[in-house]
Length: 337
Ligand code: NAI
Image (cartoon, rainbow, N blue to C red; front, side):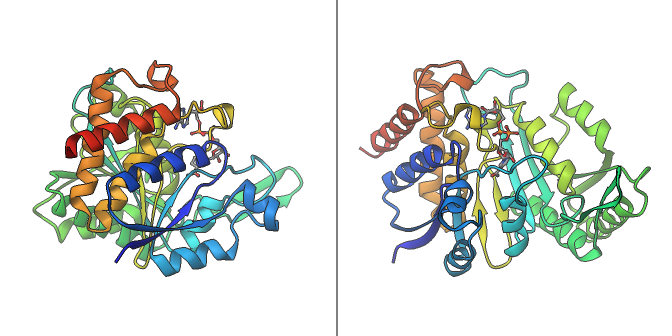
């Protein structure tokens, strides 16, 4: 039986990187029945809503999606499709493995972090209003339920993957109640998992320490906004936004997507690095139980990077998205023959 997977190409560079990731997954010979759904700008043009109900229904039915990035207008315009999607499907855990890749010269070698970000509340609750002209508020909503389950997820992942430590990042000195509740919940779950080391680190100190030396860290657990920012910072440690995959995990569905956005500056020019979404697709294959195929995709990406011949502009090369796709597929096929 083929796996049914919803494919949301998104907009900007989304369709280019999604097409590459799909072709690479298909080249593993794992049978996938792709259900294509439009979100973002193409959906606005088609039906006026950047996140049509059909997308949510499809992901609820398949339980798994591979998603390209979607643009969010700045200031006004519609609410973020990503925030809506994560809330509607209760994709509470964002998981972003940040690993050094072969042949990519960066400040540090052997970076191996997992960033776990609470994905449904905090400052991304979407509750904003004008109090009086010139004064506006955004509400930071934190619930014990969401804090507990993201902490449980972080410790579960640490045990499952043989990781040594969970670091909870916070600013409870200033946001005593919201970040305080987050920390209290983390401490409670840490006490139930004495075999995994636990520490707390102030968010600004974490950023400085990551820039100075990421090696003391392992699993980093953060609320929504901090997690968003630290994910981009961490991607800079391993070669940039084009390299870091991600998964949004819920109880009933999982959506796999890169950390990067729709990169309008390079959209439609065959310049986008597809590796982040290809590695997200590998995470998806593992989630589907296709461990061997996932490992083969990751090895083919590593082999392509090690060769160093086919690289997109963000990695100092001149290759196009489709060249990288073809090189990864050639390595996949070469490894099999
Ligand atoms: P961005 O990640 O799209 O781009 C930041 C910089 O990184 C740009 O210079 C871009 O060219 C480069 N870049 C990003 N991905 C790349 C790739 N795969 N290959 C080569 N270069 C790459 O971030 P930005 O500009 O802040 O956001 C653009 C739009 O994307 C916004 O509307 C934002 O809301 C949206 N966004 C969507 C996300 C999603 O759908 N999950 C995540 C983050 C942002």
